[in-house]
Amino acid sequence: MSFQMLFKALSDPNRRKILELLRPGPLTAGEIVRHFNSAGSTISKHLSILKQADLVIDKREGQFIYYELNTSVLDSVIQWLINLEK
Image (cartoon, rainbow, N blue to C red):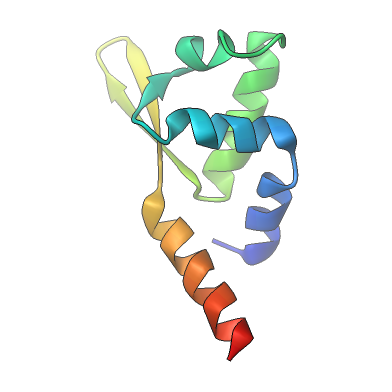
């Protein structure tokens, strides 16, 4: 994980909304798309950027791919921000 990729991923409001949608638990891409007025390919691109930044993990279950938050990366970012204050 690079902080540059992470902050780039977080800079987009649609990607932040995806992270908020994943907070309660894993969702498929189709379930995520229903919350947007965007094409599935656009959401897929956003998910790809979130995965590259290690903010999202994907897991295949049968025909479906479920996306979930990678909370360990969020913990690392929070710790880094706390250390800036010291």
